[in-house]
Amino acid sequence: MRGRRYRFATVAIVERTGGNTSPSPHRIVERRTEYRILGGLMGTSALGGLGQLIGLTGTALLIEELLGSKTFIGTGNFAMMAGTALGASLLTRRLGKNRRRPTLIGGYLIGAIGGVVIGLAARWQWYPLVLVGLAMFGFGNTASQQSRFAAADVVPDARRGRAMSIVVWASTIGVVFGPKLWGPSGRLMAHFGIPELGGAYIVGGGVYVLAAVTCWLVIRPDPREISRAVRAEASVLPKVDVRACLRRPSLQLALLTLVIGQIVMVAVMSVTSVHLHDHGYSADAIGTVISGHVLGMYAPSPVSGWLIDRIGRIPVLVGGCVVLIAGSMLSALSQPGNHALMIVALFVLGVGWNANFVAGSTLVTDSALPEERPRIQAISDSATFLASGSASLLAGFALQWSSYSAMGVSSACIAALCGVLTLAYGPALRRTAT
Image (cartoon, rainbow, N blue to C red; front, top):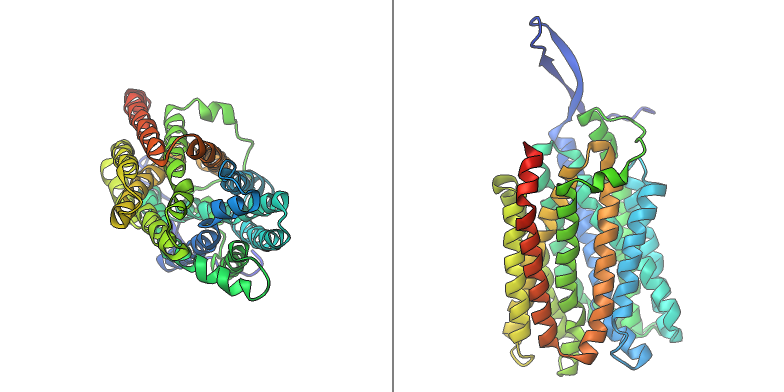
C-alpha cells in the first residue's frame, strides 16, 4: 500500500475439524494505533463541537435581528440541520464511499467556508445568503457526528458502545466552551467590521479548519481500512438494499428513538436563547445556560457507553426517555428569573438526549452488516438532523403562538411516546435475536 506501514497483527484460529491450524484473514489493530486514531477522533470531535457552538448559540438571535420577528427564528437552525443532513448523504456517498477521512476533512472545510459566508451575509444584511451559509456550516457538524461511527470501525464489536461514547464525550470540551466564547468571538470580529452575531461564525469556521488539519495528520490509516482488515470486508462496498435494512425491527427502533429524541431536545433548546434574551439575559448569561445544557448532552457519554455494553441498548433508551421527560417538565416549570433552575433544567434535558443518542447510534451500527454501515449510518444522521431542523423551524412558530412552558410540556409528551415505542419494540427484538 504505497509503502505505508499499517500496524495489524494476524490472529491464528484453530480449526475444529481435524485439529489443524490455519491463519485467519481476520486481523486486529495494534493497541497503540487504535489509541492514536481514537485520540485523533476525540480531538477532531472536540474541535468540531467548539466550532459549531461558537456560532450556533446565537443563530436564533441573528435571524431575529435580520427579520425583526420571532416567527421565523427557527429557519436558521433548520438551514444548519438541513445542511448537516445533506452533508451526511453527499459526503458519504461521494467523498467517503469506501473511506472515512475524506468525509471528515471535506465536511470541516465546507463548514469553514460556510462560516465566512454567514459573516459576510450578516454584514450585508442578506437573509437568504445567511441561510446558504448556515447550510454549509452544517457540513462541519456532519463531520463531527460521523466521527463516532469512525470510532466504531477501529475497535472490536464488543467495545463498540464505549468507543463511540468516548468520541461523543470528547465533544464536551468544545461544546461547553463554545457558548462561552460566542460573545467574545463576535466582539473580536466586530473590530473588522463584521456584526457580532455573524462574526462568531467566522471564528467557528477557523476552528473547523483546525479540525480538518488534525484529521489529515492523525487519522491514519483510514478507519474503514482498519474495519475491512478486522472484519474481512470487501475493499469495495456492494450496493446496499436500504429497504430490506429498514424492515429490521432493531433499525426501525434506532431511527425512531434518534429522531424523536432529537425533536424533544431541539424543540426546547433552539428557542431558549431567545426566551432568555427577552427576559433581559446578557450574551454571557445565555452562554452559561447553553453551556450547562451541552455539558449534559456530552459529558455523561462514557457512563452511557458503559451502560450500553453492560446492560443493553433497550434499558438505556428507556432511561433516556424518562430523563428527557424530566428535563422537559423542569424547563416548562422554570422561571427565567431563576437562573440556577434554568441551568439545571437544560442540563437534565441534555443528559436524557445523551443516553438516547449514544444508545440509538450504537443500535444503528448493530443493525447493519459491516458493508452496509456507511450507507445506513448516513441515512440515520440525515433523518436525525432533518428532524432536528424541522423541530427548530416549528419551535419558532410555537414560541410566537404559545409559550416556552407549553413547549416544555409538549416535549415531555413526545418523550413519553418515545419510551412507549421503545418498550413496544422489545418483543420483536427478542424474537429477532433468537
